[in-house]
Amino acid sequence: MGFPLPNGRFDSLAIKPLKGLGAKVYVFGSRARGDQQLLHIVGQIKDNLEVRNLKIKVDLVDMADLAESYRENINMSRVQV
Image (tube, rainbow, N blue to C red; front, side, top):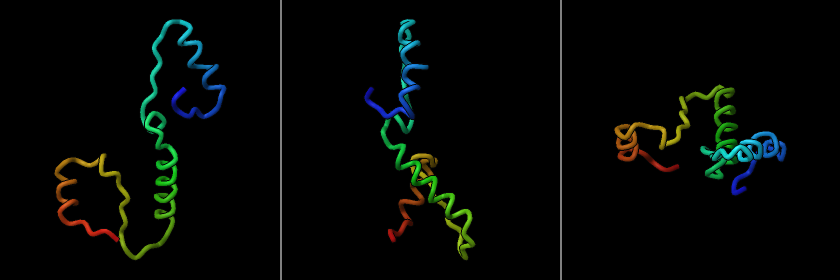
């Protein structure tokens, strides 16, 4: 397999039986892209921000999830820290 599975049992419980029936099996999302570790870390950061009593509002967003109009506005006004 070209992507990490949660454990070896997933392959034997789901993928092999489906392929044995002639099904085409696909994976998509963070596992297929190989960025599940990055998403896990971002999730932890989001959790940490939620439990802290910060004096400012902080939004952690994935630019790919934003509408194009928001991305344009952010790109024009963003400042790297």
